[in-house]
Length: 321
Image (cartoon, rainbow, N blue to C red):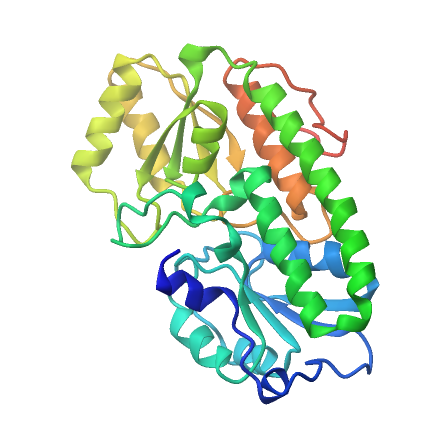
């Protein structure tokens, strides 16, 4: 394991932690701040009624470009536990989070995924693709790290956290089986997933899809005109009929591809809107990790010629999603 990754995983540097005392005083729910919606959902699933979780980034928010606000700083400073992803996902917040780690309990939960399971980051040497939540089996590592962080913060509730984690991991295992079953039903020649940015590398590796992102792993990388022309020609030459937009990334480049293919006499449609770096609206099924991945797997399978129930694994997907 690289030294930089070791540095990210176990930040518990408050005076209370160093003295071996609990980091949380039993005066109500454990106050947790999470950067992304996916991490916030994991904390809620593991913590249940024993935690109160605030997500800094809502639906449709791009974590690659997000910068902390004044209210974010206040919330994170006052929290009993701060959970962030790491792996350079929150690139604009990293300096703030590392400084905060020196005075409180701050954990980069995405760093819990074993390094041998990570994909190298093509844009930044020595870093990794952060989009591990796209594969349930990888996300399970993150959930277990959330459990560990909560148990360290509030050890009196460790047994409850363990039970909640076991239940959630069972749901994640079922989700992984569902995704595999539905995605392998897509005919092999049609397993090409073209999206706005390269957030689906782990997805492609797990389910046998060729993944093409107009932008790189980070949305901070720009797609030039040559890239658009190259991908337009690919759509035409390979007779690809569906591309996908993302809820947290502008669809401008996708629309340019569709128009470019149309100018060459090849019709391309939007196969659906995928959740890449953010979940759906709070309170909705798609606003949970299970619902997010259920939506993506169902949408991709259906659009590319596979078989999937219209309302997804649990029959809860929004109609027409």
